[in-house]
Image (cartoon, rainbow, N blue to C red; front, top):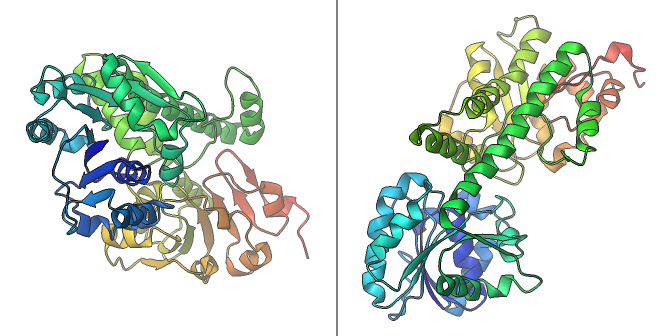
Length: 437
């Protein structure tokens, strides 16, 4: 099939790579705000497993052309127009669709892979200017850091579609990724659009609720890990998204949650629940700072803090809405010098924050960030942080304080090395444990 993809989102790059990989003739038009010359150098794209290699492979084989890269596009028909735009680019979508429909000069299917307001796919169909052309919603279900895997080996496709012919076209488009089983779940377009937003809202609610329970556990002197395991063992609840932490972020999760809140407000149905979820999350981004403040009884000026992790999640180079941004502002306001290590996100931090006099960045040896630090704060749970050299850390940290924002360490084990442990709803004091010699 002949496919034109619009957008510079991760969804656009992944679709371009995957669809051209299985033989479709794909022309990718990145958005003007991030043309190919910028995209090709983007750290988040370079760190996405397999994606750049697959894009290069498609261009070499001639199944993929990229606008603005010097590739020569085949003239001819267009069967599918695929939109993967950011919500902020919604006003441009209608014009893009109308232009594509005129150029196609034949019936086509518009696949809306963008997270737009409920009802937008129906409105975009009107821009196709053809009684036989159809628009469908294909919900973006990619996971950053696993985009190639989640597209090419999908657990399901959530398709909003009100037309049998359009469904058949989309099934053919994605047939190569659907051989193991029928992964399509079809529903009306508005239902699919709302399902995407409702799913994000539910996941965020679980996280925020668990963070509230962790705060209560702290107050009552209860280890929240027992509570988490007890709740997760209940088949009505399960373990997914039941891990307390120092707040969620990310370019898509946070944005889609705000989109759901906007949809609620636009419909005249104010959501007190969503408002609380958002408020709790913003408060939790300061949790580690408050624990640091309490430990040192407010005397923070002149101290040095090591931070491990800045990206909003492991496997990503992005810091959009990441807890570390809130933490840094709070720490600098108290005159705390920060030595921060992240294997992927230091470039994004430099771009966002510039050269701050109270910030040193490290992307090599994580222990280098701990030299001369009073305490260590774990913010992003990259796998190589999970099993540190405890004896080395105990020797490096002057105040022997570890603040675990993701609850990845065992409090008693940490304390046995002579370190004071503070997690989210978990704690252990070295003086109460048998310290290793």
